[in-house]
Image 1: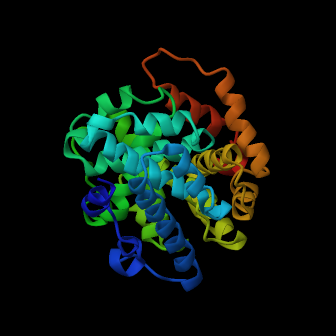
Image 2: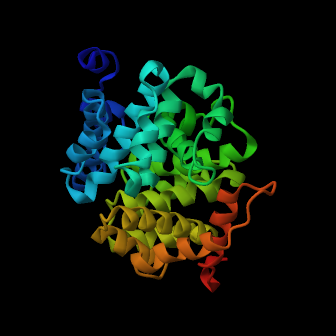
Length: 316
């Protein structure tokens, strides 16, 4: 049965190369880094198709280089979510994974669920039902993952034509845009001269969330050095707090997983004005007094509260 899964659902790591996707290649070193991210995701995804034991799966994923490990867990979560919906008679794989050996990677695993939503038609048509089965707060990261997948694999529609997929609520579109912003980091090859122009081509109501995604991707995936990030921060102008919030999310995801990275530290110093540890702490502090049950999703209140912590004279 495992061989059937691999044949039916397996992915080639060539699917994430810049040449295959038609992404901008400015700096070969940056391209290599971002392609490593894609390969690691695919490897984690395919490994999840090879075993039904989530503990054994996690042990294999933990052998991944620490800097890239989160992407392996993200890919594995995508595969497990797919199997839960396409081969439901042995369901519960994703829940066992998230609640068990992948709990320290809870941010990236929820993002991975979004890739599954993007690939399964009936999940795309029932996004709200999918969210209802996930963590009330972090479940929104699945929509972020949906946005990333759409930009990464369907840039012509999502970035070129700037269309949303059907079935997204008004707020889900905003979280989708955060993920779409993350995909721009890859599509534009982390080129800080191109990214602001691409974001400026979107309607102004979408730009804040796109910049949030750029902040997250630059701090988590890496690829840009300090001077480049300084230029990007300058180009963001009124959206600096949104970039900072994204970077803080990245710092928290890495802190919880225990895979802190030098490029995350650099990004947080520049985008947040704090160490990555302090930026991660901001997300925790604003989570402690988070109201729930109102009309506005708790996830959005959390984002706004984090953004407010990074307001400075040059960010408004």
